[in-house]
Image (cartoon, rainbow, N blue to C red; front, side, top):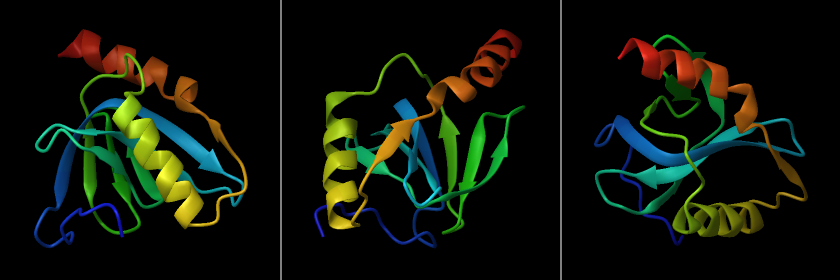
Length: 111
């Protein structure tokens, strides 16, 4: 595979910047962004739980993603998503990030 995210037991949390939430034709939602620790594009497994008060997502793999900004989807993140989607047979997808922007704005106001 082209992405090298360590196992969840090794890296249970990721701070994500320049992120988006995308929904696949299978109805799964995934996080796409830049891992702040590595600077690399990152695609999550499917989202299982969203905590709006903390701007955190837990995925089906058990990993916790903390959102750090939502200004735009970085080119490296988009590239990672395009590759991941092709590799995983995603036929179509849509960006649903706007559904999470009110929560991000409220989070930023409170921190």
